[in-house]
Structures are given as C-alpha cells and as structure tokens.
Image 1 (cartoon, rainbow over the protein chains, first blue to last red):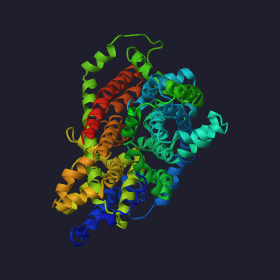
Image 2: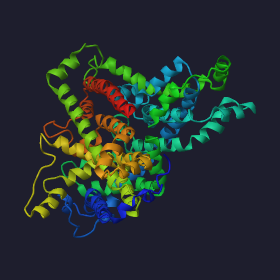
Image 3: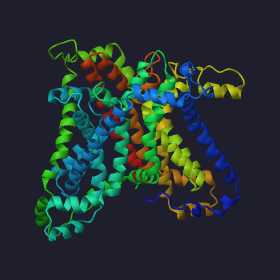
Image 4: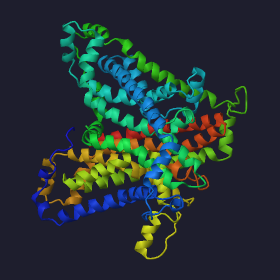
Length: 289
Length: 312
C-alpha cells in the first residue's frame, strides 16, 4: 500500500457515469468542506482581523476595519514568537533525530536476533505504544537528575515516549529486508555499524519518514507534557499560545488568540502544503498493509 | 496493519539448516550493544517514572511537606471518598468511547464520500487533513469561540431557523462531554479518513465486480463485502482513537477546562490541576489510575479487534 494516487477513477463501473450520484457527490464534498472546515477557519481569520472591542464576542461577521497586521505584530512581540519558534525547533529536532537513530539501531538487532530474551525485550520496548507516560513522576525524576526545566530533560522525555512507536514501526520493516543484502556486505568485511549505517538505515527511508511525520506532529503540538517539564522555563509555540490565552482569561482577547493561532500554524501548514503528497501516502502506508 | 506482518514473521517456522552456526554468527553480526542506547532512554525516561508512580502514589509528596513519607493507601481512599477517582475514570472512559465512535463514523463517511479520485476529492482530502496537522490546543480555542451562546454556530442556526438561538453548547453538565468528544473527533477524522481510504483501496476489484454481477446494490456491497474487509483499518482506527482520547488533555482544557461543574474533567485535567496546586502525590495517584485503566482496557480491546480480523 504505497501509491495513494492510484487511478481509482478507472475502477468505476459504467453504471456510475449514468447515475445521478455523479452530480451529487461533488456538491456533497464541497458542502462538507465548507461547513466542517470553512466555518471554523473563517471564524479564525475574521476574528484575528478585528479590534479588541469587536472581538469580545467572536462571531462570523467581517471586521469593520481589518486589524490583521496590527494583531500579528502584537502577538509576535507579546507572545514571544521568535524564541518560541526556535524553542520548539530546539526540542523537536534533537528528540526526533535521536529517537529515530537509537530506535532504528535497536530495531535492527530486535528484528534479526531470535531468542526468548529478545522477544521479551521487544515486548517491553513496544509497551510504551499503549501505556501512558507517568507525567508527574517524570518531573520528580528530572529534578533528581538535575534536568528539570531544561531542553535536555524535555528531549529525553519525548524520546522515551516515542521510542516504542519507532521500534514497533521499524522492527516490522527490518524483518522484510532480505538478510542476503547484509551478508553480501559482510562478506566484503563490513563491520556491524557499517552494515547498519550503510545498508539498513538507507533502506528504512519510507518507514522512517512515516514515523518522522507522526512524531514531529506530536512533539511540535504537544502542550501537556511541556507544561509539566518546561512550563515557564522555555518558550515553545503551544506553551506560549496557552499563556496568551490564559493571560487574557478574563478579557478574552480573542483577536490575539486567533492571530497567534494563525501565525503558529503557518510553519506547519507550509510544510504540509509542500510535502502533502508524501505525508498522506506515508501515513496511509504505515497503517494498513 | 503492520502487526499482522509481525505475528506472521514470528510464527514462521525457524530455519533449521545450520541453525546453531547461524545463531552464533548472528550474535556477532547483530551486536547487543546496538540495543543499549535505546533501552537506556526507555529505562530512564519511561520505565523509571512508571515505577515511581507505584511508589509515590503511596506517599504524602507535596509542595507543603519538606520530607516525603509513606502514608499507605490514604491518597486512594481520599480520592475515592470525595468521589473524584470514580467520576474522572468514568468521564475519561465515556469520552474515549464517544471519540472512538465519532472519529470512526466521520472518518468512514468522509472516506466513502471522497473515495473517487477526482480533483475536488483530492483537494477535500488534503483539506480534511489540515486539522490533524494543527495544534489541538488551537483547535480547542477555535471551538470555544464557535460554540459560545452568541457564537458562530448559533448564528448559523439562527439564520436557518429564523429566530435567535442561544444554546450554551459548552455549558451543559450532561451534553458538553458529547460536544468535546465531537471536537476531538473533528480534529482527528482526517487521519481516520486516510486510513479508511487506504483500506478501501486494498479491496480487490474482482470481489466487487462479482457482487455487482450478482446484482448487489451499493449498500449491500458495502455492508456485506467492503465493511468486513475494512477490519484491519477499523482495528487501527479504533485502537488509536481510544488510546489517544484516554490520554486527552489539550482540546478539553482549551474548551471547558474540565467544566461545567467538573463534568468534562478527564484524568489528565485533574492531574494537571492538582499538580499545579502542589498536591503531587494526589496527581501521581490519578496518574497511576490512568495507567491502570489503559493497561486493563487496551490489551483486551486490541485482542478482540484482532480476533475479529482473524475470523474474516
């Protein structure tokens, strides 16, 4: 299951061409997009363009005067968007890179060796797929390690949380790589690290890209674990959104909240727009064989 | 699903030819130290905190005591007698079940509507994936604004019904849990849709052709053939929706913050709130309750779903 863009249209029976559904379906599809997505996103854009008094009770009317750029510059400064953006990157990149490389290394051995111990270690390693992280005691542990409130502590927590996902995805895939590929390299005298980094890791591309996309999304958007571990110490985009929204709890600065939401979503939406084909086919190929 | 491949690989008969020699060589070829970094990260950042959960839930750890001492099951009896333990467990469970139902229903309907590969459908599929990419916290704030008594949804309803509508969608102690579950499902339905689309595409055209020749209509074909063959996709979607929503926090925190009257207080919201008050041991106790609930529920649910798959 890799090519999402497979020609579905050709599989349609001739009956379809004669049925009234042919004209109804596009209307239904557009109506769904407008109602389910258009309305919420319209609300975001018009409210982000309003003045504070107009945005007090957010509704679907257009602003009498557009204040979009003023609101953007306000949240950009008050919401500390630049440090938040780099804070998010500083945590996401090492966490994702680390969990992928370390997870893939372990998966290779877990997939290739067969013993009761390995089966037990594998079961333990993927248990995090289901079990929730112990968020409160993580804070205690980080304090004991001297990592409380640090980027390193947060990176470690995310790596621990998503290691199981990586090991699960990658082990399954490594088992489908023929052993002969490795043996050819081994006959030429390649050491295990060389075999792994030169032969196995490059082959993991598609599997790793699926896991990368999912984990990037989760870490970039996470606020729950970040509130416990680095809340108030390091700026990330969702943490600052939480602050912007909570600070205005009594004023309900909806224009600023929505201006912030637009700005913080832009990097993700641009990335998604550029990689949309790969992301969509990657996500689907990972889930259903 | 990937798991199916795994179990199949495990069940494959061991290679008997020169097995002993191979095992020894395997050990050198796939050295155990490759496991060490990943297992160290898992041990320190996942297993040790989990073990701590079982220890600190039985202490008086809080910001009000300098020293931590054991208090037995006091935290559990406190949370049990003031009702929050069972209440929050029930709310979390109801939320998870509702999310699993709505998310799969919406995802499946979207997949069926957008199944043909036309330009409009391709655009719609990408559009429905946008909420998946967005921050859940942001989604929560958007819906908090949309669902206010004077908000956008009531505006639209008022326009069609031709009289003022002022329903407090997030103010009902009975129905708000359903509303927040719908929002959660809205955010993730794009992901379920993609997985159902992928599942629908794996169904062989011959089977569908055969049913068509037998005179089966769209509904019969769907009910008798396509839906049962979607079992792997359903397993994946139901399991991920259940697990994701049992760990839910962002959407509910941003829409209701656990209200009205604590009727949408998920375990994670309780944990966050109590932690903020400095009652660390109580938060740990609830965290242990969440752990226990997920551990008790997840494995049987996955097994039941997988069994259904195996029958087909």
